Image 1 (cartoon, rainbow, N blue to C red):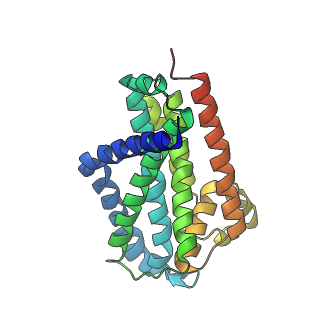
Image 2 (cartoon, rainbow, N blue to C red; image 1 turned 135 degrees about the horizontal axis):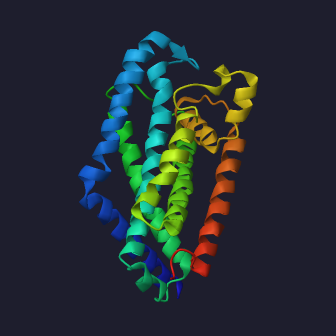
Length: 257
């Protein structure tokens, strides 16, 4: 395929993905926004007023970047895992596989769809957060790049989960038993500097710690980990997950039967 044809192909998949989650916006955009509002009310206002400051900011301001990132992670992952598994289940993915589209075009079409939903929910949550606290962006390039790259990481994760899934129940195993615990232990509601040295060191093995703190640095200018470490960790997972997804597509694992 020529470059122009590749761009048309990836645009087609991306537009399809965006229309898919916008068509059912009541299920894809509203529930995560309501969930985060409950976090704002319970953890930010009711509990936060008793905790006081953290990292030089009131507790509500401190947890907002983490809650935004949590929404981005969850929705970018769930969009791709549900969409690609649906394509497998309906066997429409076979039409893409027999077309002239290279595998990497198929992968990036779904990935960018996941990024679009993750960013859309993140923007919606950010707007809602402004009703509860004041926010100012410390470093805009860092803020945008961290949230965009993080959405890519978890969109790739959702793609791989969908490849291996054999039934609808399989697409909820990773989010339930891996993604959710890592997110809650990723420094969304607390600074890892508050932990004992041993547990702080263990927490740094959690990649979500870097993503949450990188985004927090972009918004507030404070972080528990270095910015170079954050970009390095995100880049590592993008490379590993992308080439794994490419390998799975090439071999037809979980797709061709």
